[in-house]
Image: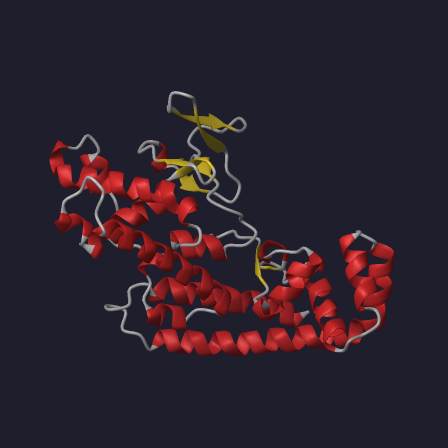
Length: 312
């Protein structure tokens, strides 16, 4: 399976958690495990109906999280791990353990080692973290203040890039109150993004002001040039890659009315789509779809941000 090696450290953590689960009260981690949530709101826990009520980008991220669990559960159910068959074949218990591992681990060595420290697990995420977690050569977990922290302040760590909350929503199942930006939802421009050397984290709309990142303008312009086989296509691509702001601005000014219209059409269309998704989510029975609340909250955040962009 593609990416199996990268997932191996998380698989090991899942197996460890399941082993401690089997030990019950005899496990030294019993109190910690017993405090873990039984209900998760991330992509692993979502149903097909959840994905259908989400915008395409975050739906894809959430689905990928669920698919990764499916791969690991398949490996678990094949045996070869120090667990009883009753545990390895119980998808609900396996999903619970996987979600604990997924949402509470710290990366020690990327793609090689992940660890969980129950005490450090008490730290919450913060857009502007004030502590960082490290491990020494003996495996001891250390929490270090990044600056002087006033007494009584919560200790926070970073769980991901705060400028683009969609990956954290898909992985952890929560929304930040103070996220500064969201992806502009131009998933259909992914090829152009890659050609220009941009990622999803660059393609942002500001949640507070509706500010449009420069990269969004670049991608929409480049898409127009490509679609029309314009002679300036190669010049613009080269200018972006070489950070040639002079040439970029020259081309941008020439085509600004067309780029602006393309962006307006995208914003208007996305708002229409989000309204449909919110209406769809509101038809769900919340007793059988408990994650609908956070799905609607996510969609409302997108709608409010796009409306601020629209007002510009």
